[in-house]
Length: 180
Image 1: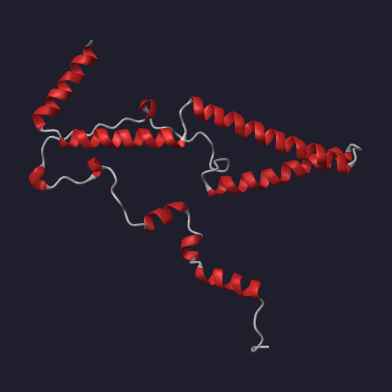
Image 2: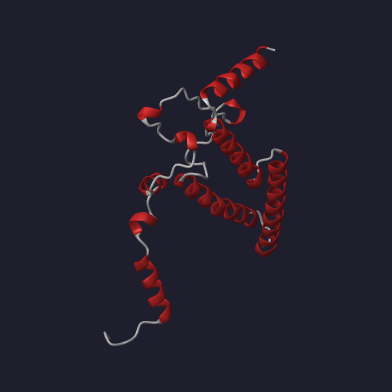
C-alpha cells in the first residue's frame, strides 16, 4: 500500500493542510494582531526625540465626540468568534424550526420549503437594500470613510509641520471663535 499514489484530491487537501500554520490560522484576532509587526501610520503617534521636545498639541476627534461602545453582548456581536458561532447556529436552526413547525401544522413540506425560501431571499434582498441606503445617507461608505481618514491625516501632517508661534496663533484663533 505504501507504493500506491494518493488520490489527487486527498493529496491536495493534505498539502493545503500542511501548508497552513494552525498556530496562526486558529488564533484569536488579538493574538494575531499582537504577532504582526507594528507600523506607525500616524505622524503624531511617533515618539518625540528628547532634544526636539517642543510644545506639541495633538488634535484628535472621535466621531460624534465620543468613543462608540459596543452595545451587543459578546455572543451576539458578529465581530467576535462567539457571536459568529451563535449567529450561524441561529441562522441554521430558526429556518428549520419554522419549517418543522409549519409541517407539523399540516402544511405540505414542499410548499413550506418554497415559501420559506422565498421569504428568505426577498427578506435578504430588502435587508441589504435598506442597509445600503442607510449607509449612503449616513455617509458610512468605504470611500467616504477613507476620504475622511485621508483628510485627517493631511491636516495632522500640516499641523505637525507648523512652527511653535504658528501653532499658538492658530490655537488663539480657535479660542476666539469658540468664545463667539
